[in-house]
Length: 243
Length: 349
Ligand SMILES: Nc1ncnc2c1ncn2[C@@H]1O[C@H](COP(=O)(O)OP(=O)(O)OP(=O)(O)O)[C@@H](O)[C@H]1O
Ligand SMILES: [Mg+2]
Image (cartoon, rainbow over all chains, first blue to last red; front, side, top):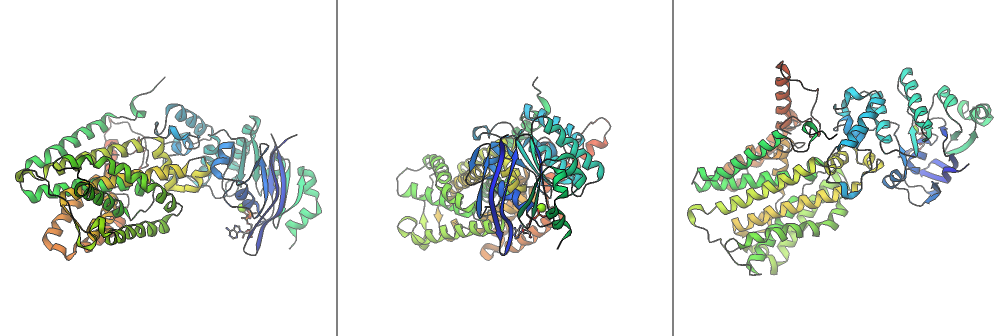
């Protein structure tokens, strides 16, 4: 088993708050991992540091067997690491179709080519169709509902055919049917070989979909393992029920 | 299977617009022999170009650049120095200088742009206008080159008095056409899509693998180079340069107001804005002289635009047109609303 992503001793403080405290974990190729923990336990910060949106104070990461010294969102994405945000982020002034097309990586010398070339358009239309957004292809993304924006963000991320996708709370704030839809999309992509690391709070969703489950508390990894084991771990119960 | 028609970069409606525009701009100065009117046209066309050039960075990429007066001034002084010190010669020859001036400015500005573009929003606006005042201060102080506060004279062009403005008008018009062509290429290319993404959410764009640094730099350099080209023609026309006049904060403000009024997400918006504001501005300056009373009108107009037409005239008109067309039973249209998509902004986009 090879680790697709390995983080080692990640530490990140905001003023006095230790958002990440020597946090380490690994995600094996082909798995669907979960990153869980109480509010403020550092899950989003972990994503931000891994994808280069925030600089770690200490620690490092390895992606696809390569040590990534100074993570940069653009470079990592081009290496196959994509992410979504806890609050869905789309480009409100661009159409849904363009939002997805934008996910396709471009070499610099293609910058003067067509804004939406035929092959990209067709691929994006397929993705929009798959995510049930085909009817909104030409609508500005800013006019989509919260749930639709979550789906659109996910679809856009998939345009580049990433190896590893980090999803920050894909199921938060959406109705139960949408949770099921998200789960289906993740399962389908997983079947095609995409690896996932998912932050989620819905335990049923996590327990049925994810393995391993990594638990953070106060920035520290307090448990890691199969969902059944983690659920019974006294430290985990303590973190969720304690303080 | 390749699909032409709706997905092609070149659309019939756009071609017709371009041809009609070129025809109108070419004929305009021939209609009247009144010097003040032709002069007004020269400035209006210049502002249409400046607003369009500004729009590359300020509109498409959403970077609130306030200091384009700096690039305009650099172009103007380069022209003045080129004609008076370097001995380029008179007549039409100085116009040849436009090309090296534009390219040179675009290249020289790259390292500065790299620094400025590390900031965003308000910080970028402040830095860009600071840059403008720095260039102005340089112009005041490098007296050997610029003449400082006593000004710099550009040799008067030896054109016949009856049609003195025409060469300048056509030079400005050619630059405007070039600027619009550049804007069109940018809008209809991946570069435009990337710039729009930067405007909407730069950090997310980075995370999607968009080369944000590169596209911002290109937009900045091209915008600055084109602005300098207009400054060069302006200097030859105006024949006298003074730092506070050639490097003027109001230049960028005027261009921005025009882009906002016409619609900064569109190709023709800045031109429409300039066509409306440019003549009024010239008229006010002519009526009230240097009293700068027109600044009050500027401020009032700006507020009106922001409150009443936040998207500008062109997108609002395009939407109304689409609604009308949809109302007619023959038309089959999608429910498309104003986006930057070149295919959805109606035929005016
Ligand atoms: N930019 C920031 N500046 C200051 N403090 C921050 C910042 N980002 C996060 N924090 C703090 O770091 C800690 C971890 O935050 P983080 O957002 O990573 O938690 P989380 O596990 O994602 O929580 P949630 O489940 O609420 O999304 C919190 O105490 C938070 O207040
Ligand atoms: Mg979070």
